[in-house]
Length: 465
Image (spheres, rainbow, N blue to C red):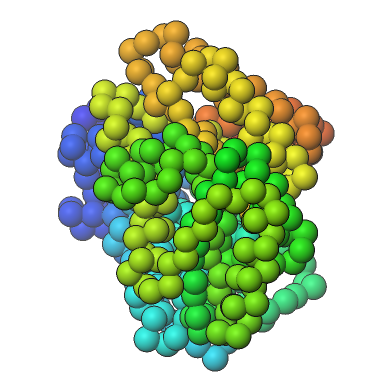
């Protein structure tokens, strides 16, 4: 341990217990990387606070010394968000994992940032409620807010920013603020809640979230529809949305991905471009919606449609979708996964996916395509030998090609994974003259540049010291 780290640890131990501050090599290593392909970096130490007040004191220590602070949920991010490239203090929120209040009459819940999505839904179930955002990984809600997470249900319920009504935030100065209220809407002041959702820990630490929740649907039905090509599947989705069919989830898996699903889960799904769909509602309305959907997909040459009406079968279907990344990893031992993430206007989606498939074939990459196609978001899962420079270059080239395609058509370089370190190089291209405004916001709120430096936007470290 170097002298500066020893001094920092001593200062933190003035108000934290010894078991809340760690320089253990294993713990540092576990907090040095996320689930991305980006190279890891060890923080100087990891702290495990139990309250906003403790985080305030931690940040005041960091602010005084100009020490970087990196918020850490479960490390499930995909663009290097929590990697401590400038060393410093990693704040692990695992000890702040309480559902503090369920306001069922207001359809609101208050949670600490370390609460996971599945933990929250377990607590809500007895009230007949559920939290809608479903990114696949059982991420923490603080991390999901920090990256404006999305997922399979966004087509009906919206993304994370649509669910956050208020945040408690510790600023880089150590001051604690609230960004919103319990009211459903407000015209008062700047919308700080929206500013902090998606800020990726660069403007402060989220220490409590007030979230919108929903009544558990009376009836749920899922379906699996197979098509001769991806184009047919995507056009079917566009037709459903244009017709106003109230789909709760619609996920696309290409032929290669369905093959991996079958190998990993022991299923026997038809190995063609497939839509996984789900509908929520009352029984009578649901029957009408499903009948309308059947008519539309048949007009787009749907070959087979299979319905899953009981809960166990539906769970198996969505488990297969959520486990797709692990299916690829399991099927490609020794390789690392690179997950791309672009989002385009719905009208551009078919062309974007076609372009992506053409580039995969052209570059001869081991990959599959999937996506939350109901909101124009798709991913390519690339399996890369990290020791093979040629493969790495091909993967980077592919990522750049699909990002450029999306940006040229009014899309974004990241639909839901966030910017982190990996997508920073595209920020100028996407935001143009708006990027310096973002950098000015960062400089005003975090003048020393201590909050998760090197992520989301460029900032000068230590310019006010």
